[in-house]
Length: 87
Image (cartoon, helix red, strand yellow):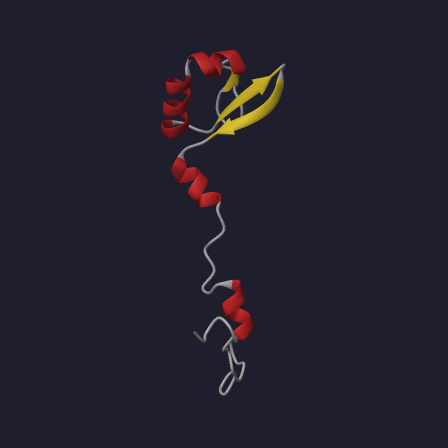
């Protein structure tokens, strides 16, 4: 593993990350996100579940389809389907 200073934590060569995966995960949890490189180029970042959750957008208050039916006048709408709703 290369221990060079990096803004996102340590950098790991892929073969080192595979061989020491448990350590990589522990360091991601305790220290900072860990960058994995392939042939010298950044390929992936391992980060704690807490950091991942913080990056996710907040859940919407309503489902998108629910937004589209708010305010529609559905009273009296016949939703029966011949053949499906009748024996």
